[in-house]
Every structure is written in C-alpha cells, then in structure tokens.
Figure 1 (cartoon, helix red, strand yellow):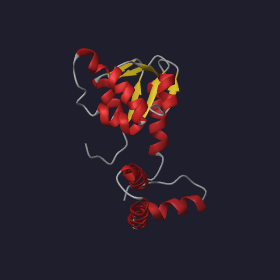
Figure 2 (spheres, one colour):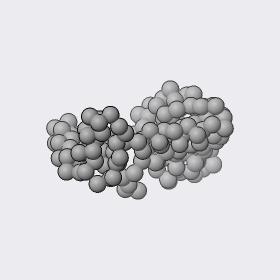
Figure 3 (cartoon, one colour):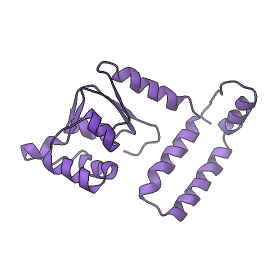
Figure 4 (cartoon, rainbow, N blue to C red):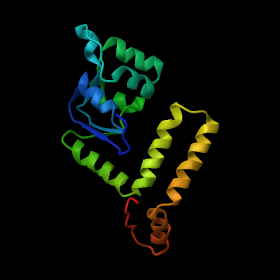
Length: 167
C-alpha cells in the first residue's frame, strides 16, 4: 500500500466493485468512452472493503462520493472525467496506448523528482500549509543531493535530452 512509483489504470469497459477499487488505488486513470465506473457492492448486500469508499470520498468529495458509494449506480467515463476521477477519455481500443503515452510522459522526467513531487502532492490531505511548506523544503533538500539534479540544468544548457540515473 505504501509505494513511491506512480501507478496508472487503463479502463476500456466496466470497472465495477473491485475493478473500480483497483483503479481508485492508481495515481491516474485513462478510460475509453465505453468505460463505466461503479462501487456496486451495496446492490448485493456487500460492503466495498478494497478501499473504494474512502478513496472515492477523498477523490470526489463528500456529496458525489457518498452518492456513488450509497447507490452503487454506474457513471460513464465522460461523467468520471467531469468529476476529476478520470484523467483522459479516449476512443475504445486506444486506452492502453494512451495510458502508455501518459506513463512515458511521466517517465521522461527525473525519477527522484517525480517521487518527491508525488509524495508532496499526496501529503496535502494530512498536513497544514506550514507543514507542507517545510515538507517542500525537505523534498528539495533531498533532491539537490542527487546526480539528476545536476543533469537537468546541464542538459537544458546543452540543448539535449537529459539522461536520468535515478540517483
């Protein structure tokens, strides 16, 4: 459950119950226009115990989150995009290519910077602004000590793509 690497979901059809819970555990979701999403356990006298209810609340807020958790009704990819649950909506059959393109865009960046930035962004729910300012300074202090921190500006000045080492 604790991880430092980004996870992406590619949903081309239905992500119901546990399927949605897996997608909610990811950092980004790419969906096709055929995709639908639902925490449907309540329709079968079950409780979603794979993190769906609390992840849904964190990602969508209490009003929409509660509605989806309590009704079990599906939403379309377009609605999920409107609500901020899905990052990108694409044509059916292209979802994996788009998810891989998004992964490549993330992967093109300095891995330690991505890791530190991801952790900082996720800490917003657990800390005050003053604590977040300190966490930002701490993340940058760790980042400055890396080889990649030297490589980024050097590659920029030399007008070439950086070669990240992850250290």
